[in-house]
Length: 107
Image 1 (cartoon, helix red, strand yellow):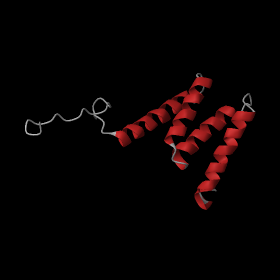
Image 2 (tube, helix red, strand yellow):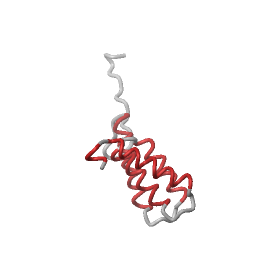
Image 3 (cartoon, helix red, strand yellow):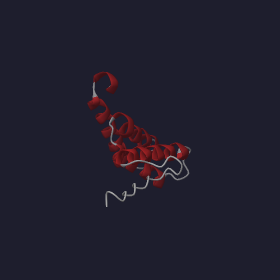
Image 4 (cartoon, helix red, strand yellow):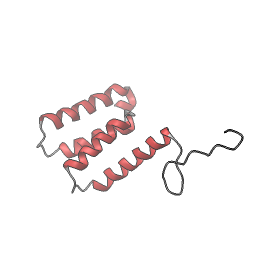
């Protein structure tokens, strides 16, 4: 519905997942709710900071989950996006590229 009628439907879904997680922490649906909420935050709501936090909470609560690899990949993707926004990456090492040295003329 969010694709068809607007972002507010995605926000309402995220709030419903948050309610489930907060009010029923031992419910068997909480792990799935956390994953879906993180996906919503990352993809539809465009909030990588909140998505990262949700994925990290999932990792802490469910370290042996069948979704462990999926969460690790999502966190890696979010880290790459964050690094791409803040600066250039060295393609070989996937580390931030060093700042270019000043030429003798610029000193």
